[in-house]
Length: 187
Image (cartoon, rainbow, N blue to C red):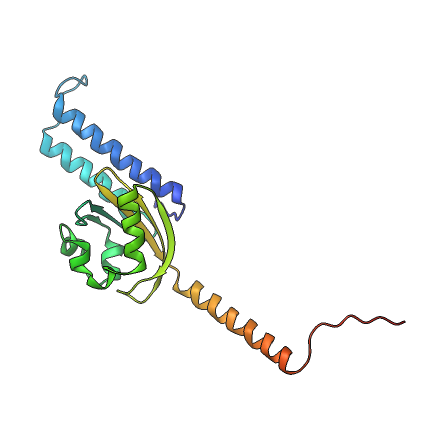
């Protein structure tokens, strides 16, 4: 079953699950054998947690990344990498601003900095200076930095723009022609 969601709560749940899995891993590392079973070797446990996280984050409908406090990519799902013609491995460990200099002074960067510095979730719609597309984005603080999820809303923005233009043309035509809505009274 594939999880498809754009629900902010579902994304927060995935970030929470990430924190729980990391805490569980830390427990195993600190207290081997205390859980009533023979613990996996640390490397196996880490690999198991990484596989579970990767699988969960790859299921998200849209693009998803995690950044540490130094703005380095710690996770990139395949759809996020593909959107910028890269592979996840090409971005892991790399600095966001060095990888995408056009983002550095953008509105998107301001929102990401707000999430990182104020430790608050942010939700916004902005065009990307990297792809030229419009995205609806939610970024959440995590213990290590931030997690961000976005999806393309370019078609919706084009439709909204076309509707505004049509309404403006109708308004101008009504004013120019002296037409409009009239109330008739037969007195």
